[in-house]
Image 1 (tube, helix red, strand yellow):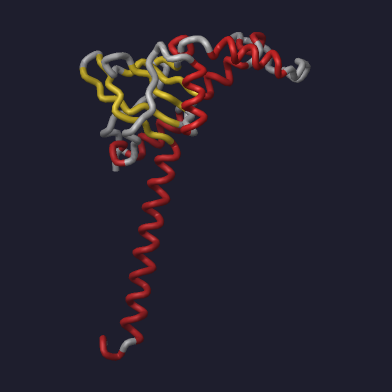
Image 2 (image 1 turned 180 degrees about the horizontal axis):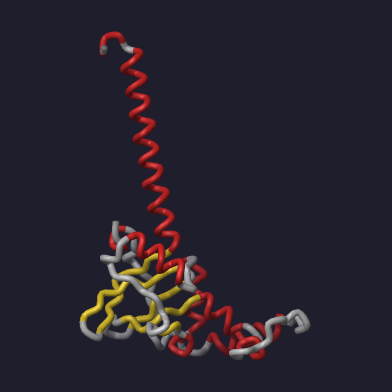
Length: 180
């Protein structure tokens, strides 16, 4: 089994110039944690995700490389949070992307065990599926931990259903004297 058999093909995509507030509306309405960003040639630029947004909403003191680890002393002021969100919301998503050089990705031909390993190593719950041609990286889909889980559950359910059906057929055969 490869990524191609479990990845999502129909994607909500962003352009680098799309505003963060528009991305948030899509994320909320579609219940998506990561949105791929592509340029006008459908070349993969990066991911805009909820994890990055949460980081941006932290107070500046916590965002610094060796920033504060304990924020319990800071006031719980939603007004400041809304101001940060309003400021961030009007900026383009390109200002806040997880860039492709820092991102893990997979190809449609990536085997299932390797996808599990990549998802385990990734800081996100989904990976872009990329076709690489020279220096160009074309986005062809996304694969998420949910896609993997869904495929596993469906396969396990199908196997259990087949096993149950076989058992029922055996029992029916054993109890029917005409079939013996």
